[in-house]
Length: 223
Image 1 (cartoon, rainbow, N blue to C red):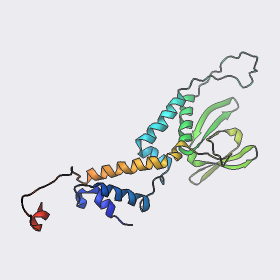
Image 2: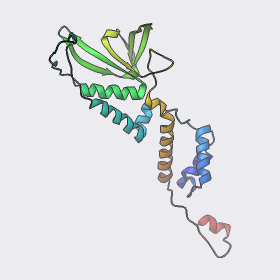
Image 3: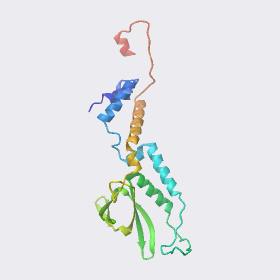
Image 4: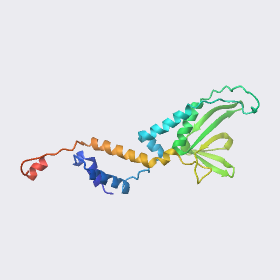
């Protein structure tokens, strides 16, 4: 792997105080052909590194979490006027996390914590640890969670399963907005890293030095 474009673009302690436009072109060419390909990073990595990705995911999650909602009994008939159920579960937090996971990995899994008295809590599971293990024509029949060396399995009625659309798969996680935007976000990340490294290594504005006569090579090197 050649590092010449990096040396030219970073400047400062690498010996280059000014960067020409051709150096930028060389750097981008190196990035595409020999460096990390834009889009190689996961949407989750870019969420932690690129302000636009972070802002977009949070904006969508904040908007969904602010949606008004009412909770009514499951056995309420269409012609009945039932009273709203007392609901102690913080649904705004649940909705926020579900939307965030959908934007990053295209799926969200919410575990229903129940006992004999009924539903007690909802727990959003880490989507990175979850997968659809078995399914049939009607949908998922078994979910699996892996955390380290531990493995848990859940029946469909134990979970709330959310997924985005995928034209090639009707069961597993679909395609997230974060995944679609990886290449664009990676270019922003690369540009930010280049700018930070350029100034961190002693970059200064480009200047012209003129003389009335020839300058000996020794003096050029000293200058």
